[in-house]
Length: 246
Image: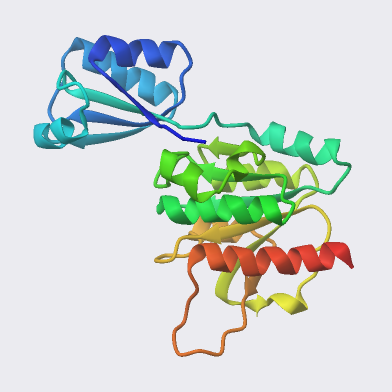
């Protein structure tokens, strides 16, 4: 099956895309452009919490498929996003305690696709990603997930820390991965749980980490100090699976 993310070019077309409810993953605008239609596009983007990147004309020309971008290009997700409520409903339908992956600023689409694949195989009920500073559901993510995007709902939220607070009201506990944490084998990871994974460079952000109930470390014996984000997600996910099965 082929996956295709779409670009929409031209001011009127982009405005209509927003107003029709299309999920815009990213918006590229010519730096310095401030006329009426562009101001309208910026307002629509702000209303939908869409990430805006101000770029040069050369960059827009590279991204353009038509050569008629009028200073604006919108990137539409290859897959539709779900909601956090969809993920919780997925757990309820299976009569299982919620098991959710939350990804803090995973910017590499290959890592995101691999983590979605792991989430599916580990029996997680969904994946939550932030709207900004993170990869969206691009064609690369879809391909790397090896079909898991067809079965695993992915929700996009404005504020990951606030989402964790809201999910705690649903009885969920949260564990994040960090080298300074307690060895994962010594933690109780049963029940309704959210697994929080950060990017390889910075790890889990401070505000998100502060919202977590537990910090888990993965025992490592080698000469380097960190795992690839998708591998770390897999290792911790399967410790959660082991405990949920026991």
